[in-house]
Length: 456
Image (cartoon, rainbow, N blue to C red; front, top):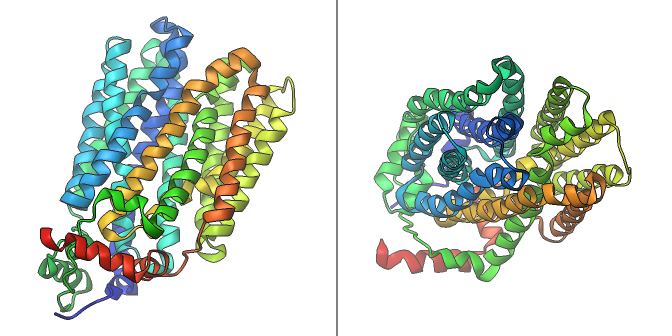
């Protein structure tokens, strides 16, 4: 049986296909960003309409994040078992169904449950979309394409704030239209995703060599020899042993610290600015400024990631996040304009580095048999950080004030910088197989194959 290194996927002739896969993957990330951020915009309206006490706003805001933790961990593993394409469609169906149900919720607990179930799909898409795109992307442009996932996530998040402005004239029912819009977006994407082929790398890992070769032949328009059968269904525990443990600690560690900081700030941006602004419109405009600068930061990261490399980008960006938050924390009673400016700078830096590289690093570092599982584990760990930030920040602000509460996120950012300085590898320009050989090692990769042989 002949072997291929999947170099056909690096062909310039496949640019159209690469654009298609990228577009459909980023569409899922757009929905992730929109559906997660829209609750922040809806909360001020909901809190008044349903008389929700402050002690219950945090759990409601975090309900989708709880679901994401479960979805990333469980459905990420199923993606390695059942295939990228099947799960690619399942998670979009969750987006559609539960976004619609959230929009028609009649009370707090219905909304909480439906947001949790929506979170299952959101969490799954982190590992599914990024894994599928990474396995089709050409090595030289993989960083830019993968970072596009993160950039589009932030575009979705910013769109949620713009939707808040657009629907605000509808008054008490405005939050329903905001939530329903996420379902409309999902319905458009479901059909288009059905046209994407299964990953040939995943097919190879299942011993389905003829199907893998057929996909590559269809894409290239010329015959491709069957790839070497390398059946692999590595146990989940292998993520925590050998050289892969270092990779797992890095991905989980930096993503946890980033998400703790990012969610703590952004989920409550409209609420915080609402307390400082003289009118609701001022608060909404300030939130839009923060969201749009976040998109700008992600765009900067996309533009430079394949030139400057992953390692310097994540270290410098994390450091910028720390500086912006530390300056804000040192100002006892900052005016609205200063809070908006420093929040926006913090989000810009965060999005330029860890906010887009969290979609890149896990898919590049873990081998095919554990790629979605490892990405899912890192995403689930990051959700713990998001839950802590979402639940802790309101109480900390109430007890200590905004400036003092921000020191928690400054500390998390410092730890993020240290993790990246110590553990972040450089991965630009190498194929996934070459990265696996260098970072995991031939011996461990052979062990994964041998462990899977009885199940092949």
